[in-house]
Image 1 (cartoon, one colour):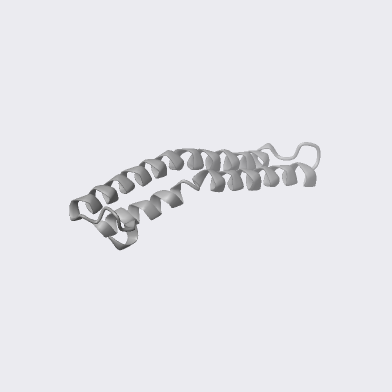
Image 2: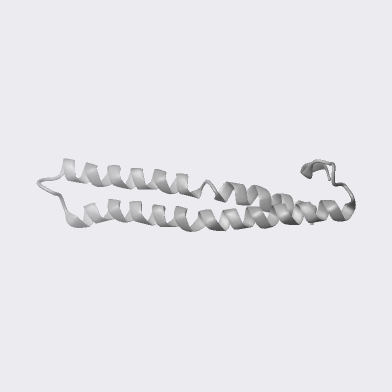
Length: 98
């Protein structure tokens, strides 16, 4: 149970960074769209432009969806680790050494 709680804390903490990865994907997708506009005649091929915009939107949605899941996992794992620590009588010890 202790290993599961610590793994949940680590994984939950990593998932809370999902919006930053979504933002990075958004920037990359928009740069791709602007390159399409700049390198082709007039406004470019709409299907090429749509590919960059699609990449931007998908990465944003994934980041926004994963973040609350990560926060929930983080909270549940911390609560489980604290309960486990109290059950074992190690209230004054650190989480990683309990």
